[in-house]
Length: 152
Image 1 (cartoon, helix red, strand yellow):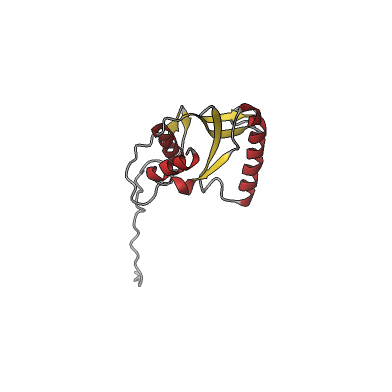
Image 2: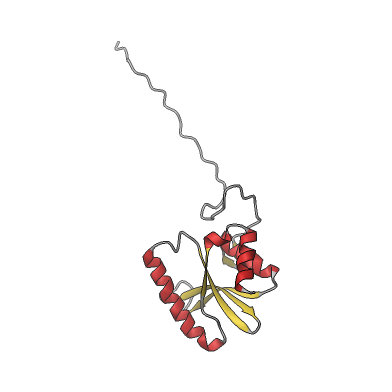
């Protein structure tokens, strides 16, 4: 019988506990903010929900995820995150999460889509498209400050 010099104990891989959605950005230490993952029947990120809550707090009306130039998810269509109504004007606002808007190509595509939206909205008493960076919406207080800045 052969004697083995090395003996290794095989351990079972640990099971990872499911903790919910992993596509949401949440700063360290943030408790449960009561996110539901949707607004007006459409999927929403945490930063979009915070922005919407800040709009609600200011009692500003808005439509979420309005589609232009075709149907939802159709090639060539452009989805606008928020159409905010205030004082007879419409303010088109895009929320930029760091993951979906980080590369140069993605930012170039964003600029092209903004130009298309600005062109079509020009005749509708609308301001130019405004982009709000997701890192400015990492807490509810920051989201409220961003809304105050936009709608002084």
